Every structure is written in C-alpha cells, then in structure tokens.
Length: 412
Image (cartoon, rainbow, N blue to C red; front, side, top):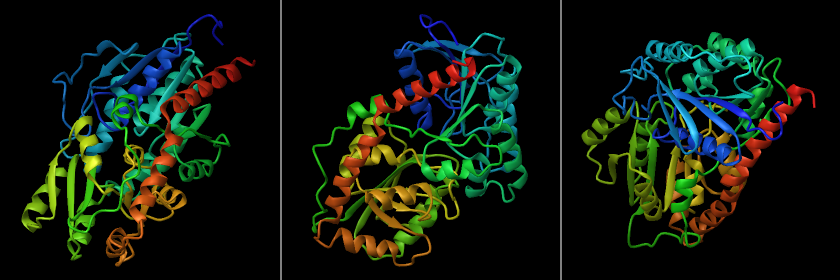
C-alpha cells in the first residue's frame, strides 16, 4: 500500500476513451473523477475509432501518442480497425492487435499501485492480467460486456463455448470483479472460481451530459393531434437488431415518427434498407453531439432501446441512463429477463416489449394514446430512478473499491 500522503498510482486499460462516444466518454469521466480525488491516473487505450469503426484521429499506426487530458495521462495505441466489424475473423484480429500493441509498453514492477481493466475487449483483459501477474500488482476487472456472449448476441460468433473458456480463464487473474447490473453479476458469479460476491458498481451519467440534461419535470402524455415521437440514438450494430424493430413498427398502422440518429457496423445497411422501404414515418440521421442528443430527448415521447433476442445477461445499454435522466420514457424491445428488461419492469420507467409478442408495439401505442397518464407515469418514475446513477456516487464507489483492493493486497 502506498504511503497515505502519496497519490495512489492507477493504470486504467480500456479500448475506447473520449472522443469515442458511449463508454469512451464514461471511462474518461471516471478517470478524471479519480484524478480529482487525488489519484495519479494513467490510461492505456486505442486511438479513437468508435462507434464509426474508422480512425478518427488520422494517427492510427505504430506510434504511441501521449497527452495530458483532464488531469489524466493518456497513452493511445494503434489497433487494427475492422473494415467489416461483423466479421468474426476480423474481430479476432482486432482483439489480438490491441493486446499486441499494448505489449509494446510493459508495466514495471512497482510502477503502479493498482490496475483497473474494463472488459468489453478480452485483449485488454489479457494484457492487464499479464502485467498484474508479472509485477504482482492488484487487478480490478470491471465487466461492461461479457464479450463471448455479446459476440453471439450480435451475430458475430455462433459457437462461443471455447471463447467463454478463454474469457473466463483471463477473468480469473483479477483480484476484484465488478459489473454494472444485477443479472450480469449473477452470470459472473456462476463462473467457477469467481470471487463471490462480485461487486455491483453501476455506470452513471457523465459530467458533460449531466450538465446539459436538466428537465423541468415529467413529460406529459402526447397530444392527440400529432404522431407519437420516438427516438433511437447511439450505436447501430448486430446487438441492437434495429432493422427488425423497424419492421415491427412499419407493420402497425400507428401514427408515429421515429427519429434514428446513430452510427455503427450496420448503420449503412439500415439506411439503405429504410430508403428502399419508403416509410415516411421513419427518418435516419447521423449520430449527433451531446447538444443534439439533448434536443432530441426533449422532443421525444419515448426513447427506443433495442436488444437482439437471446442477448441474455451479456450487457446493458449505456443509453438507458441519459434516457431516464431526461425524463423520457423507455420503449425497450428486448428479452424480459435480461438486464434492460428487468430495469424497465422493476422500476416502471417505460414500456417493456418482448420480441415474441406480436401485439407488443400496438399495445404500446394504445397505452400512450389512452389518456390514462401512462407516459407521464413512466416519465416520473424514470426521473426518480435516474438518481441511482448519480456521477459523484458512482466515482465515490470506484474510489472505495480501489482503496479496498490496495489495502487487502497490503494486508492492512
């Protein structure tokens, strides 16, 4: 354990970091929050590429880029960016390339007091586990995605038993495990050798977006003289199955307007398909910045979040948190027993539609139009539940976890 007067030195290993959206912004916010609380934080991440799956910096290659950002030392490593992110082979090369690229900067014994690695990339976990073992540094594993199961859910891999064995073996190198939803924790605790209990450390709304999202109160039910306004914003990939959701919407005779703003591995495919359908109720736009997201959430009556059937407990969409914080009811199309389904059902923050229910979307529109206050109730509940995902509380939990990890390793 470092001297109490010193700044604990933390290495964070993750594939995405701001300006990458989604998890990239959240991970940057955490690292800056740790720095604000007196920790010396170094991040090893990839060059920015997500969710567009292209080199956004123009500097992808062999050079390791170093900078100071928000009090954090950021080291960016080159990575193989798949031309086809839906290719299983290309995704394997992508994972391996990050691991090999990181190996060019090994950790020295005594260089860090703790290592924190985020999994959605098993390559990051492999590097962090190897460095932790080599230097006898305590390792915290934070599971944002169960990668092998998520690959199956996204249609990237059909048989994942061997992937799961590799993933689980790498997980076992960590001293502390945490994850972001109760169903994901249950799945992790079923892994033989898992350190039970797995810590529940949910994500939060990062600071820059939280400063913009200041709703006046719950949303009212939509008026009868206009279409029900639906918004989808974020990643468009295999895990979302957004095209199937659009097919289900088109099959209804409901008066609605769906605004899709996103990017990802299946965005071009979806745009071409929508253009061929010619349904004027659905409009697709590029992914917006935070100001655009805030404007769109204020416009929407419901925030659409979809998960491909069979996703199980492999992930929970980060977009859920800004949706609730804006007071926008969630329209979730997913497995009812997965993390998203349980959140929506338990806290009544929106309408839960199962893929197997043919009448699900017509029922949603009937409730939204009933005049019985369903939308207003969902909105009020979403605002109340969003307090659970407070930034300061989330970062404080992370500081406690790191301090406990270092103290346990030191024997104090």
